Amino acid sequence: MSLDSLITWAAHFGAGERIEFVCAEAPAPERGHRAWKLVQAPGCVADLPLEHPLELLALDVAEIGVRRELCEHRDRLDARLELWATLFAMADHELATPPSGKRKRAVMQAVNMPVVERRSLFGLGRKDPRPDDAWSPDTVDTSQQRLRAALRHLGAAPTEAGESDGLGLAIVADGCRAAGQCVTACPHDALRLVHLPLADGSQQSDLTFDASLCDGCGRCIEFCDVPALSSAGSTSLNDLLSATPVSIATLRTRRCERCRAPYTPQHEDSTLCPVCAERRANPFGSSLPPEAIERLRRMREEGSSD
Image (tube, rainbow, N blue to C red; front, side, top):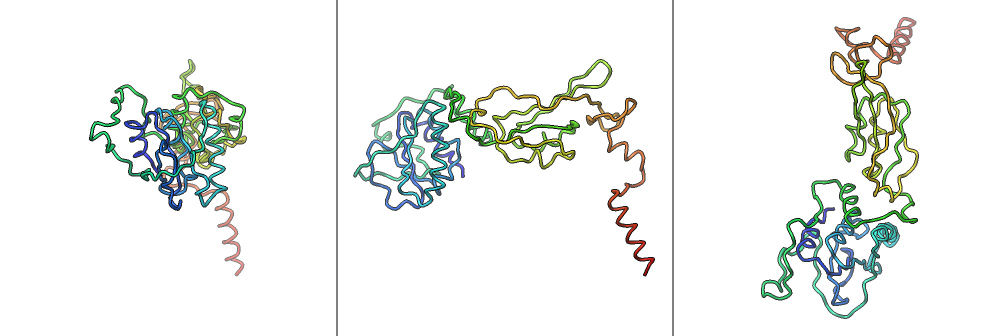
């Protein structure tokens, strides 16, 4: 679920405010402390995008809390709150517990926040305009990129709790051929393949991995046709603060003279990638895999015996 309406509201009116989140199923949540803005999620608070509370802090919201006692899914919510508490601590903030109160407050919907506050129409409580160069999240970015940007803007630092399992996979490579399917498959640009020309006409191909951008989807492992990629476990939350991608595979490759794709030469005089070499060897068709050939042979033998 996207709460960009809430983020837009916070950018214009949220500085110094205290936000109290409640779940959509919360019964009669209006009563509470007058100093806290009551914001109702479109579902369970446990399902809110992980980056949004951090973005609210980066937009100068003073405090963020959750009415845990009104949630019907306490186990899921507690797991989410523990994760948020760790991320808040990395940014030198605390996830607050909203105080109780008897005042009846307006319930604002997180997906439909007001673009103008009523008091400002009468010249009351008007805040200074937000500077043009003030930080704002890029709504075009992925959820992982937005979380990383918010943490870095808040000046987050590694913590002991941040060494716990994070969101991504610790990708390692063994037997990489620099085909690049993994780079294409990754929706977050966590993998990059760089080719540097060498004096002998070949090139050095370097596959790098940015742990701060990996969200653990596993598509790179799924689409690698070697397969050369695997996971060595989970990344840590502290990896979100990493600014330097690491090299996970370096190899010598060439450009296919026919399709120009990089490939790993099996012979010194090789000039074609495996696909183009196969097409040159079978210009009027394609050869079947060995398993299929063996299956056809058995079928013929069974048919002749009948």
